[in-house]
Every structure is written in structure tokens, then in C-alpha cells.
Length: 201
Image (cartoon, rainbow, N blue to C red):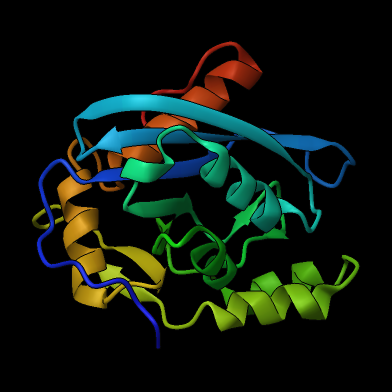
């Protein structure tokens, strides 16, 4: 499998964390996607945004466009996403994102996804078999501990070794269980849509 070799992972590695904002489930419309560009887990360097269709099929394309058009692109080393879906079940293809941006992808989930439940939900949508295939293609789910004695989070990866992905997740998880780029992206997206962000992420 093709992957990017990291000869050394610096404490200020530049990453982008991408998460979606609130949306009304099962209703046509768009969901806000926010990308937070970070150095390590401490410094916010920039914010990007785009929109994807709720329960659509365009999230992968929107993420690729947002990353590749950014002035930060040349300094980015990793893309992190808040799970494998945005706006309900607009499934992202992490392998395609890696191929078309040249950046490894780490998809983070707070809990282990229930694939049986996800499959039942997908069956109510067009092209559900294709969506399910993309989810399965993402590969193995790896548990990661970011804080001592705390619950594990889970990651799926494309274009990066498991050991390197774990190091990057730990380096960037400075204030909560999840990487700071994702936590901040979520807060920004929620604040923009609702007028105020909820505490934590």
C-alpha cells in the first residue's frame, strides 16, 4: 500500500482538521465544512470553509478542492477528518483524498462505528451500496489512546503508517481526547451556524 514516509514528526507539524457544522437531518440542503489549520496542537494558523450536500455524494470532492486551493497547502502534512461522513451520510473517500491531495488522511471517531446500524441507515439513500463500499474500503479501525487512563478514540488511515498516525494524533490532542484541529473546526462550524459554539467537542 502506498504511503508517505515521515522521517521525523515535529511537535509543530502542520495539519488541517475538517469537521461539519449542525444541519437538519433528512432534509435537502447544504452543510458547512470547516477546516482548521494548526501547527501541532497549539497554534491555529488559518481557517478554510466550503459546503457539501446533506446526505449527498460530494463531500470527497469538496474536501479535495478546499485543501488544494488553500494557500496553506504547501505546508500541510496531514488531513484529519471528523469521521467518515459529513452532513449525515455524505461519505468521504479517504483514499481518494490522499491520492488527489498527496496528503495522508486520518479519519477520527470518538466511538467505534456500528456498521450494522450504518448499513440500515444507508439503505434509505440513493447509491447506498456505493456509499457502503467507500466506508468498507477505508479499511481497519485502529484504537488510539491520547490521554492516560482515558477512553480510546478510533482512527482509519490512508497514505500513512499506523505508528506515524498515532504519533500525530497524540501530538495534536492537547486539550481533549480528540486532535485540536478537529475540536476547533467543530467549534467554529457550530458557532457560525448556531451563533454560539457549544462547550468542548
